[in-house]
Length: 143
Image 1 (tube, rainbow, N blue to C red):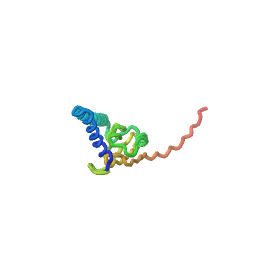
Image 2 (cartoon, rainbow, N blue to C red):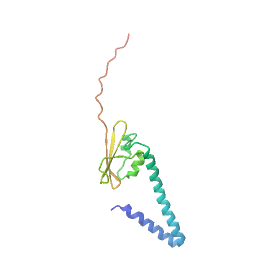
Image 3 (cartoon, helix red, strand yellow):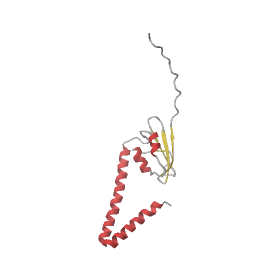
Image 4 (cartoon, rainbow, N blue to C red):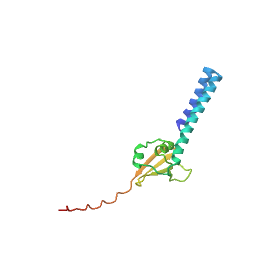
C-alpha cells in the first residue's frame, strides 16, 4: 500500500477540520480554495511538461548517458518526462505492469527504464559497441 495515497487525503481532512475550528464556514471556504489551488498547480505543471514533450520526437533524448546519471529509484514517470522533455517509446504492452520505456540519443545509446505503478524501479544504459579503431597510418614528412 502506498503511504502517499493515505497521507494526502488525511492532510486535506485535517486541514479542513482545523480551518472549521478556527474560522467556521469562512475556514471551510479557505480550505476548499487552498485544495483547489494545490490541484490546479499540479495540473498546470503536468500540462506544461506534456506540452514541451509533444514538440519532440517520441523516445529521443539529447544524451542517454546524462539521463542515466540523473535517474534515481522512485522517480515518477512525469519527472522523467520533464527531465528528457520527451515521451518515452513504450517497449511493453499497453496498459500492463510493469511499464517499460526507452529513450535513445543521436549516438544510438539508449536508456531503458522500468516503471511499476508510475514509479521508477530500475533502468539500464546500453551503448553501441565502438567500431574497431582504424590502424594508424604513418605519414612520411615531405623534404
